[in-house]
Amino acid sequence: MKTHPRCAPCLLSRVQFEAELSTKDVTLQKKAIIAGIEVLRKYMVDGAPATHLSTKIHREAYKILGDIDPYFEKKKESNAYALKLLPFARDFVMEKDHFRRAVLVSIIGNSFDFGVLGFDADKATAKDMMKKQFHHGLDVDDSDKIRIMLENVVYLADNCGEIIFDTLLFEEIKKLGGKVTLVVRGAPILNDVTMTELIELGIDKKVDSVLTTGSNAIGVCLKEAPPELVDALKSASLIISKGMANYETMSEYDFKPIAYLLKTKCDSVAEALELSKNMNVARLEL
Image (spheres, rainbow, N blue to C red):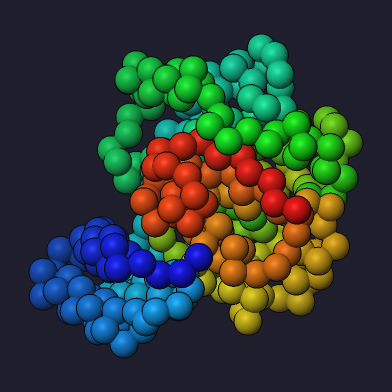
């Protein structure tokens, strides 16, 4: 996916947010934002992949802030909130149509930025929000086609919190005889899950193998990816790409078949998919 003019204010807003997470020094916050503006001025050009720009702007912000993981505490909160809701989500999946419902729950996890939005899993509103999403269902539903391609899955993970709900889908894939190679970020960026959180949560034991993207690039940057990841992508019976950032990068490559599981949380991603905003999407591309 290519950059769009509306990406600029979105990226700067995220830089401001992570600067405020990192420090109370307003002068340093301002420096991070100004650095972000300079990145936009230099690298926001027609035809540039969206994640190339977002990777540059966040790396520069982290450098200015002197902080390799501004979202450290938020990621812990996200996982704690999601763990509280996991039994509720599991009950929904186990009622019927297990695989399709596990796909939906995984996508619903993508729709919530736990902690970031002040989402409180202890309150009834949390379950109410999920119930509404359960009732809404999938707007794009290729789950039946996806279901028969699970022999050797490479699963590109997205955020903390969200990864908790992904475990229900891992379970269903394995019940159907599939193997899961889970791919997480190689180093901290935003609230994306890394090997550190994966091991802390014990999720590494729920899949067949774990790889990393090799760096803290947004999504998957093949230039920075280890050879074993590239090989895995080439040999997969199916790549499952979770979330918008992974879509933004993987849509630039030619790996197929690939299933995009995401919530269209922004207009630019929705337009690129020729869909509307706020849709639950399970799309298979062959």
